[in-house]
Length: 283
DNA sequence: CACTTCCCCTGCAAGC
DNA sequence: TGCTTGCAGGGGAAGT
Image (spheres, rainbow, N blue to C red):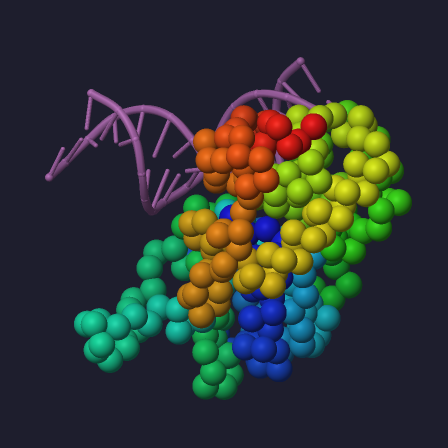
């Protein structure tokens, strides 16, 4: 479940692999829903362009090209950006490593003009998105995003939260309000801030908002440091797992004791998503 | 406009 | 063992 920390970890690891290299080969799948820009146009926009930087906006990865264009990738639920190395597995225990055939879930393959590694975008559930932008152009999906969760200040966060009547959990998941927070870190932050996910956003006090933003940013930063959370599909570009799943206090811990008070963690469905919380610690 | 509900897609786990 | 069913969820679209 790639959220801000997983995308940021991917950005930091992918950038040194692609910055300064020129795209020389593009292979795409036939997925109709993944490509917001048709593959033929994507090819025109990318071939021969050098990657100058890899940036992040909320859960979007933006590959900035030297001609001002951008390749935008959203990992959705099960998206992975991996290098060819991620497909290398020993055929036999202790045997030589051999590249296995890329599977049907590879939707985009970027080859470069040099001999370095190829970059693959893999996404079994196809909830991810690939979008090409030419110089000077943006896209509604990017423009609609609220401030990045790591960059927003308390004043703006508090006033935006105060204006909403929906449950605070639903508000945290709304990318128009705040970009980057998903289901895992919303639950974790609400636990750390001791706020029930069902509480209406407008009922949070100024002090609640302060604790909540501090918890959101703290948990995001710790998760980045831990290499992100691997629950099912997220992997680093080299195929390795993140480490934050072992540090979750409520997410995926339904029925287990709260790490603070021992009360069993509860799970309810809220905003079409599962919300995990401690009924005693959180109010 | 704010908010809710439905739905996309596949792999995996649980149940029979 | 092998089938069916249900569940996971980011977020856009449509509905209220």
